[in-house]
Amino acid sequence: MKIVILSDNKPGHYKQSLGIVEKMPESQTEWLTVEFWRKWRDNLLRVFMCIFGGIPLPASLIHTFLRWGLTSESYSTLTALQTPDIILSTGSSLAAVNLLLGRILGAKTVTCRRPSPLGIRNFDLAILPMFSWHGKRDKDNVCKTIGVPNPISPDTLNTERKRLTQELNLPDCPRIGLLIGGTDRHETVTTADAGQLGEICKVVATEMDAQILVTTSRRTPAEVAEHLAATLKYNEWCPFFIEPDTPSELTDPYQAILALSDLLIVTADSFSMVCEAASSGHPVIVLTLSDEKTRKPKRYNVYQYMERHTVVRQCRLNKLRQCITDGLTSRMPNTPLQDTAIAVDAIRSLIDNS
Image (tube, rainbow, N blue to C red; front, side, top):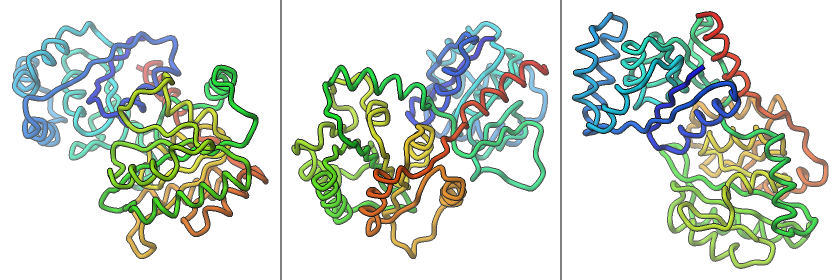
């Protein structure tokens, strides 16, 4: 089986596709980065396919659209492809290109997430997280997952944990992974939050003789990242403070934190990070920093489902210290997400039934 993965260079999208193909060792994979001449051409291509995606299009017209929308390098690379079985993309930007390539190459088209404004009706398979499930009737081309596929699993992390513990000569103590996201139209993280979070980490590290392993993201406000660094980074109990695009002795610092931690705390703004943490096999606290009166986005419905099924525990800052204590002392029960395996089974079934 040959799978072509279209990439827009967004880490959250890349990891979803990577998680799937890593669980398909029988497949031959090829990664292609797709770039558009201008963002508005990407948007127009999406609108066109939204209107005409269900109509048979001549190959010459498809080539014209691809040549018009993509950079010369991207167009040349894509049109040189040799008969893949599957074209896989994640997100909205590459959905139209996925569908057009599927037409001229005779390949099955697979999308992760519900692409806007195209929708999923013209894809052979759509892998949809819970917040994208629409309607009561199941559709033949839909694979339902709770979260999103990703490369994280208990087995891979346990192997990495053993290696890193020996390689880094780490002490035998509890470790807490703190994964900090950022702000969006629903969520905020402020320096006041950072100050309170830093104090909680200091108390927990001291009282429980624990280590705190921290990573921020590209969406973390600069003043928040700076405040956390000043509070946490230079303490003995904080051996890792990982910031995006900064050099590290670790090959994959983010995965190292997931592997080494006994408990993971993830800010609720980042659905993909929550899903990765929830796939780890470790107890997970989803930390909400937004105002209680703020209208919650759809992902909170998924968090509630995960909490009911002992996948994660939700918490606000004023309860975080107790949640950490409970997680480390009583070992909160947790059920790892299996979304990647579900997505892989659906793709294999698509090929077997074609």
